[in-house]
Length: 292
View 1 (cartoon, rainbow, N blue to C red):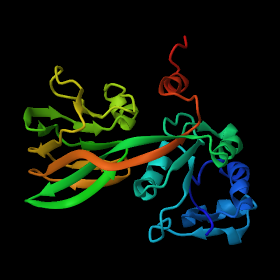
View 2: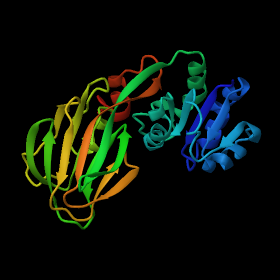
View 3: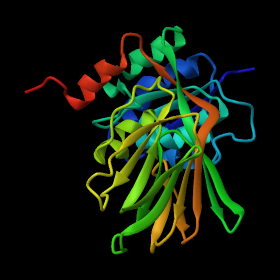
């Protein structure tokens, strides 16, 4: 049975066509089947790749067995999309960065062909990232549940007043808080929105989460790091025009009295990295540590 590749890409990237021509032929030559979302069909044709080797499926093969690889051509947002549709099912993800930052898609577009060859040679290293299970409860019933790789964000709308929330961590009452919102991030998500809100950078191997308030009303309310083994509960008290956003892609409107429950998920997302790209080397590369 041929090996299966799920292809997820940022279709608006000017680098997509050339990257497809660099990255896909080795898979096609080895007989891999390729599944992608319908929006990728035009770019595939423009890249001159054989149409009969591509299957377009909005669900990315959700009804089929777990694929052998998910190749992501884009930025971190594209990879989060791929993680939700493929990585959470157990498919390892190989990210090639078509943008400028890319903590998750760490392989540069200039090395796309070499990165694919390294994967096929079996020299890439699996990096298994912890995830966060998020539930939204209202009036005693669960409205939504999703597992996220980066973060869950409770935040007010542009013109809404400050939010009143109550936080619990495990069996401990962390007290009431007033802020524009609250971010709960995994170690992977600690370099995303939580970092912009003043949160710390966590090494991805840590079993911990960041809780970072957004524009707190009290200056002493600071970001904190809590053990991943302890569940987190956020109860919304006085709010208006507030939303729960999951990995920056899926949103749910919130009401007073809603409760957001968060805990470490059993699922791990596997990212494939080249050897020698350690976490602090990545921080120096992406955040320009040490530059003057």
